[in-house]
Image (tube, rainbow, N blue to C red; front, side):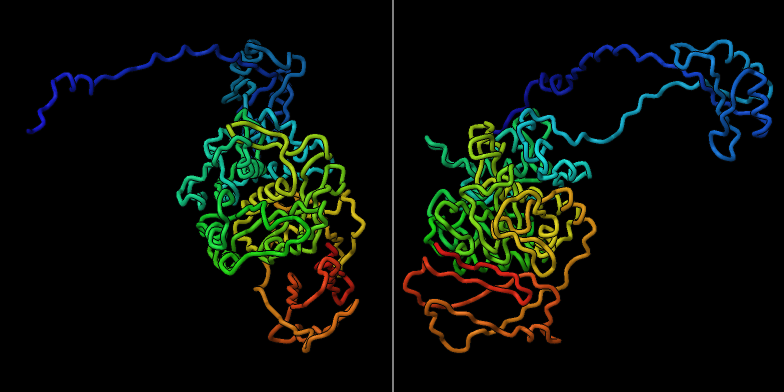
Length: 524
């Protein structure tokens, strides 16, 4: 049966127009008159001065050079009034040499700048970025230069992200998100009684929670787009890791990860075949060839004497490993040390007081996020600010910049040493506390690094017995040759195979030609 046309009433409904009554205008601001006049005269500058004096006014010169407009002022008249000065206006009206004049009024103008201090209710708790301590991460300086992460896409590889959280939803990017545990596009975390799947939501808020929306605090890069990859809430395989690390590598700029092998002081583990390939492909082909940026938490195994060099994710040359420090400059009990750490951010004020403010499950806020899990997303947000300042930075450029923008400051460690290029470095903090203001300033001016060169040197040509101690020296002059010339040393990778009866007693150290010692394995 054919559908019949509706009654004519439909036509009338379609034409119905509702006009809302306009709100009555508010009272106009009163005009404020000054004791100054702009006057156009038909004579030159000298005659204009005489004309002004004849009428009891002072000529303060031309308004615009070469133009017959002059500034006349009366010192005795009230400086501000709500009405025109009748007498002086009448005199200027009757003066034949005055072609035009106007008594000046105050114009209301506002600076079109955004306040760098967010209005979010918990921003006063964000001690690590609101100038509450000295030094903080210098985020306000980066914001004052106009960098807030705009145009940068960041994703958090974790247990999901509460995408409808009111402090995340405005910045949420579905293209930077996926659920590899359930194989669907929705990264919403699985809710359980203990809220154990809150980790990803907390990390995301640190980096990119919205600002000035009256909710929680502000993310470091509060105008960046943020996504989440749910991959830790289920069986974790090499394939799941590789899928997560390579998700939309032309769309996502920064991958932030606060996980790794067990921090028990015994485990030596790292990426499998697929994840290793994902790191390499991300660095060489991600972001249009500039390289994906992988930010990694160094680990929380300090109490177990763990060493993050035994974590193949943190010590990969393709990741930027981040350590933790307390506000007073002390090393946290959970902090691991290793030569792979490049930089450090805060994780808590003391062991018992306030920690990091961020978003939490069930649309809530928290000020109890801590550990290196809290430090890495702060660094990821700061990297987003640098990428907004200079989108052409490669993954290697960013490592150079992070090193140069990190300061030893008040960070306390017994192993601070000056390396061959004069920079202080520590296994606990890398090159020090990351400074966002300095990072964006250097990023703007950075001209780029030369193409990566690789040089391989074989140190041992035959097996050797370690005994209680074995020292191996090798000549690296081959790397100064014409074809393999290393101008600036960025990474050293040592590959060795050994058998040892008690690996917990094993110590491996690497010493550079200029005397800098890097501990590759410590007693565990």
